[in-house]
Image (tube, rainbow, N blue to C red; front, side, top):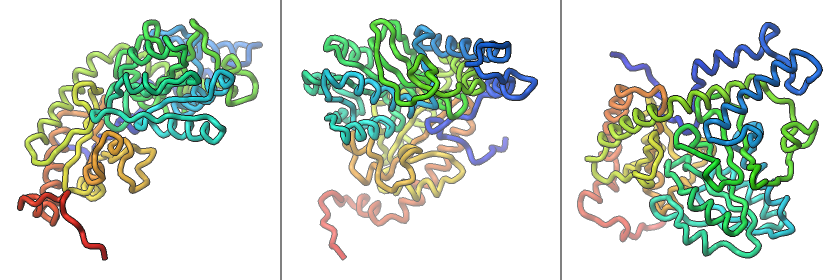
Length: 406
């Protein structure tokens, strides 16, 4: 069978919209569809749109076992992270101005915290363990009297490790600290039960889960009630937390994507794990190959792997039939090595030689086999050209070499 290239292995950056989702969305755009403004409550057009929005809100809530009244629509997880962290920090600033997060968070969290630092808040950035996970004791030691918000992501976008948000939630609740979780990479991939978890705020995105780009949501817990300050002002939509006309077609798309995820998640995860295992098996007998992040406590579709003595950028060029990434899409325009890999203790060389394969709903076993062949071929070819590889093969410890400056 002929394989259509390029092959998409970057599902953590974005996903294609599921055909069922696109079909549903198309019913909410034209004059023959449901196009009304959900806030127009004086006529049928508005009521029909309002019903569609309510239904989608319920579908999003159902996936994570929340009350639909706890779901606030936003433009995506970046906005949700901003609204959650700034909103909670501002609302609670009389109690204190100390925030805790991790060095491996998404830029939407890190840059939001940086902005709060400019406003006079103090932020502690925790180091992960070398498997990418947070040691709960490190968090406990960082908590102070004036700590008001802790923000820790559920699944890391680069290395796919799953943090123990249940344990972190227990700790935060016992200290009366607001706990925010960025769940952009975990919804539909890891079971989430917000009736059980002690999580106050949780960010979601549609486009990581086969829904459209430009729509997301923020879970805001009702019991115990969490208060946040709005960041976007206007007509008072979304109970005053996020003004702006609701994009019905995108909301319906997100609802449908979450509905499908709820139904198909268990079977899909099993299939993805089989494929990822197949992918890793294809590389693990190679020399100097390192998996980045814990392999057990990890989402099924992610394999982040470093091929030592090969430059990641040249490797990506050599496998241009494969759409993979090194680092995350939001930061891959810079040539700095991944800050996530550096935080877990990888040296610059290993961080630079990493590739992130993320597989998803439309990945096939044939595509995985093709990726293994192409990547192995490229790594072997590039290593043949590398003087560092020759030195390594000659038994020279490269960490001890003193390079002459020009």
